[in-house]
Length: 343
Image 1: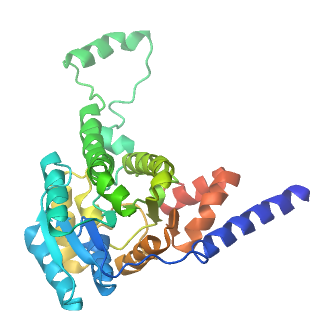
Image 2 (image 1 turned 60 degrees about the vertical axis):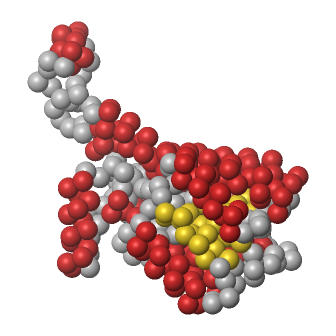
Image 3 (image 1 turned 45 degrees about the vertical axis):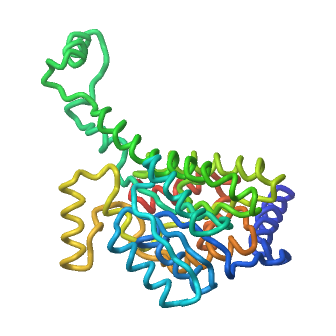
């Protein structure tokens, strides 16, 4: 009975904390502040740019696709004709592009107040699928298989080996986009943010707090991202620089169409299905309903910037799941396996 009371009290207290987080903080000024947003051409990044424009913020928008990025910039200007909006086109994983984002930002504005790290990629296959493991390469490793193993190592076996190169390639891509790029880009901006007492807003994922089947590589990159910026938040607190980590559940965007572990033919086929029928991505495990809208995510991001929220888990049920995962991890594992079809 006492243990049950403890759990109920603990969960109630943490839920109340999340509900009241920021309620007693004086909101920061957003109007006329200077905001840099990566991955701003679509989805969450685009909607975040539009939301900051409504608040009267000046914007530096960066993404790879120049045509759609220019369209977003024009939408922002049409929302608020008094703001200044510039664009920087390029791959955010490129060090030269990161330096250009910094130099163009500081050339356009005297200081940067908010850096929104949104550019990201996803993986959607299980490790078995990525490694191409099937009945042909599942073996009993006994004395009789030693000769076959030697042939595998020499590349002369008819038995198919696990495709480790495929996994390493996908892992390298997703870590570059989801971890190395935001760490590097934020590092370039840190001196300016320290000077302005600004904020870094990191768009992460619930996958960076709770793992899930078919999201092993994605979760690895987001766990690394969360760990780095959680630690950076503590280091930067003495400079009055805040770091907000936004962890949404599944969001209704087309991110999964460009997953790093999809074969080019798979990605193209899904895009064709999406265009022709409005479906697409149905073969990819995960949520098919109850997705968050990019617009709602954007409002939470801007709100986190205003109130210096440390961690934002959305929708509300995921705030509870964070603490359930601490108290009842097997139950949360069950829910994750059910969601992704692994029961």
